[in-house]
Image (cartoon, rainbow, N blue to C red; front, side, top):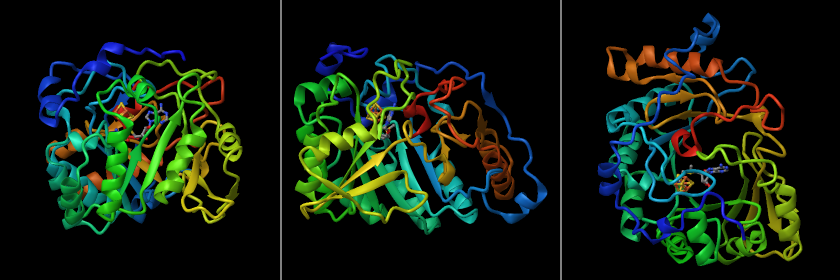
Length: 379
Ligand code: SAM
Ligand code: SF4
């Protein structure tokens, strides 16, 4: 088993609390991103007049992912290096800025908001964020988490505040690997306790995400698939993308959806569900033996789904990213903190969407990895 930039010492550190993570890291500032632009060029008048976020390739934005913090208590090898640099605290979106953007985005056609990060459960005002979005919009509110800080009480509070759905990441069922992969003090047992807590609190349908990395956990596809059967939920396998802060991704390390599927089918034959929405990132399968649960494959590297993309991202420091792989991002913070009215912000979002690139082109020689990792972008 090889290690990828692993720092074994980190696995021995206690998991930081939300307050400690937010309080202990303000001195680490991310370098200025040279590709960061202030404002997007103006979209054509008819596009602005539509009051919808459509891009120049005919796609409409329905799904907004808001990274509410770039901090995390894990340091997953495919995402965040131990010495990753964080944005200065004063540049992070405030509770009211997040709620305001959510409200304006809904008026522009967004139907679902996923709160992400970093680790969103570290945010000290997560309940208020959920309640604020719920109180001012009718969008579906989803959360993606590493499940290291879930309790039935907190889940109940979030559900009461308006949280509809949860996705949990779990990359290994083996404690030693889990520690090496996440470089955290958490464990598979803790994550599975989070899964049980979500189910007990009725936060369904629940989805699990795993990223397989060659030489780390690529032999665990079928084991992880058993979680779908055990909990009657969807277990999804995401191809490892070049969005790691170490820039260590290379073609030898990602595991294709086809390979994961073959490994699972050697134990559990699958049948295509055939009911995936066109804008869905996952292709889903049921178990041929009729067991409960589903398997999903998210294949951005081997089968890019850019043509049906309905997503826009807002980073924790207020940058609009039209694509996960954008090398240009648009800075909304000056408008949010200046005298811009809601219509100005709506125009900005429409203009930014119009710049959305047709696809990410990971497989092409021209591909350039974005400077910011998944944890800063919001996965
Ligand atoms: N901390 C939370 C978590 O891990 O679920 C939310 C943020 S994390 C950035 C969101 C998702 O992005 C996780 O499912 C994670 O596995 C995935 N992710 C992070 N880096 C990735 C990469 N380089 N390739 C593919 N997926 C990645
Ligand atoms: Fe943290 Fe999630 Fe990135 Fe892992 S994948 S380091 S849990 S943000």
